[in-house]
Image (tube, rainbow, N blue to C red; front, top):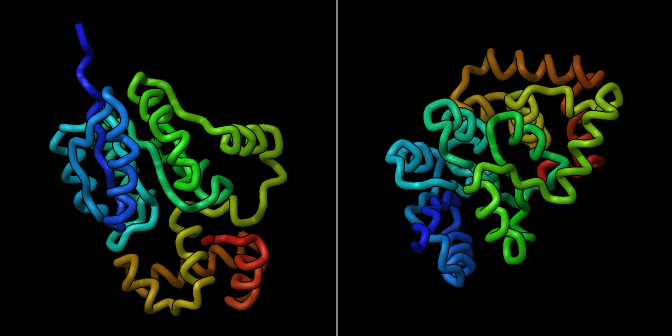
Length: 214
């Protein structure tokens, strides 16, 4: 008896990316696109509807950060396998994503060759670990005491760091994250303390040197 195809949900704010992913999946007979969305709210709605078994979720979206969306979906619909598919390098968000509930992390540059395999893996209840991610996870286990300063930040602090590094003011960041200016200022103070820095200029220089946000 033929198995039912794996229903996949695609969440990405770029229509051209969603179309490209659908073309890749169209060449398979065991995977079907069951829905698509362009922002965090649509991702949560589709997850709740329960029509998908695997979700491809981007991190950078216009309304909410993908890690925050991932945490909510994992809390509300834990049976949905969420595979992060993003342009961000593995060393920036992969470990954070896995800790937040993702079952795998894939760079969009590898989608054409690895996407189908990754979907099949996670739909079977396994995690998808690329070679790059495996090396990073191993480093976190063996070198936890030697982590880079930005790796000691919480998800929200890291998100705030990237926004500061992009040149945004505390007021702009507060509006983008739907937080109070006081809360963002507290995050900034914690970031400076944890990273041993004095001002935004040092944070921006650090982000550029470590190629954060690329």
